[in-house]
Image (spheres, protein in one colour):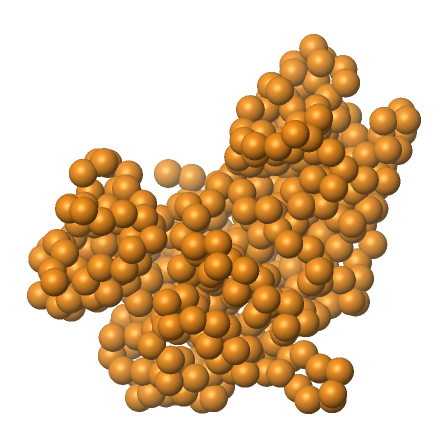
Length: 474
Ligand code: SAM
Ligand code: SF4
């Protein structure tokens, strides 16, 4: 197993949110004369951005396709968070060389974080690339495409302090028609020392709250039953309305929850330093705000957390977990991100991470070996000195621990009944449906007469560390 640069998510086989896995645009029914193929890598923010890109280009006579061979424009929306995410895109470009040689008119663009990080260097290193476009420059795509069609290479990697694409209605790609993502903010001001995001996505800015509520309302009217509010740090959402009043994340959650009791609301990601009691009480107040929090710890060692510039220590993080349990109860789903083998991490620091996991008992997690990213504070000031085999072993121990806890947490659900939103057929059988409960756990059950978009009550009868299995009860 390629552990050092590998990431593993203990989630469930049904879940499609795999990190670093490409998502491909769908065949759009449209009279547009030109075909656009988009492949998106990395986080949910990137998938949401690809939907904005598709919308901008629809205005320019492009319809999306899932067949790369029929596209005249190929866009790869990239991730730069770890080295292997960038390697994946480089390999993909190599695969595209024969096609580009055969079909000279095909244009290839690199979007997203890798475009922002490498800028014109990407054009020098990857000769088949025609266009490099950073995350804040998508409105300029039509002009950049014109430039490319005139025979030039095109680049726009300007970062903005204002751009939120608030007025653009995303075209849903790869959608199940039931659940959708809504970007509520862009960028990040946190400067965690290991992280490239502040450099690739720029300063934090919050989107107009009314445009978010409108997008949620439109989705509900189209039949969607769940929205996930997205941002690198949703709890620091803050928007000033024209009358001077401030909308906080707790206010926004409430506004979206009030769209309809039949519209479920989720959000991601929460930074432990910013999630407030007000947010927790708002979650408690509304049945349709899902009781699930993704609360990345990154490490259980206070010394490492300080080097990471996370601005909290182990005790503070544990206090936050206690508060979540006090206000939302033992059942509230909690998941983590953890990094193994950060600079100077000792065996004792690693044991602190494992013992923090024992304290919290996360429902699931996303776990990574530390990957040094050029020009981040950690790369400049610290030494990536944990040997690869040690990183790999520690990561494996964290993953094994998470698997134990996921099973333990799932076993707590056996014998209980949950309201589940049906998202579609189970991957393995057309006789079974799958959907998630409030706590974000995927449940599989015989379909009876139900279908995608229905809410059903499911009694859980068995489980694995990844999935719950049950049947519908009245
Ligand atoms: N903003 C979110 C937060 O603070 O939790 C998520 C940011 S990032 C897209 C997702 C995860 O990637 C992080 O939580 C961290 O665990 C991981 N990550 C970021 N930089 C990394 C690096 N240099 N090496 C390994 N993992 C990294
Ligand atoms: Fe990166 Fe930290 Fe911002 Fe998350 S909060 S995006 S880890 S800098």
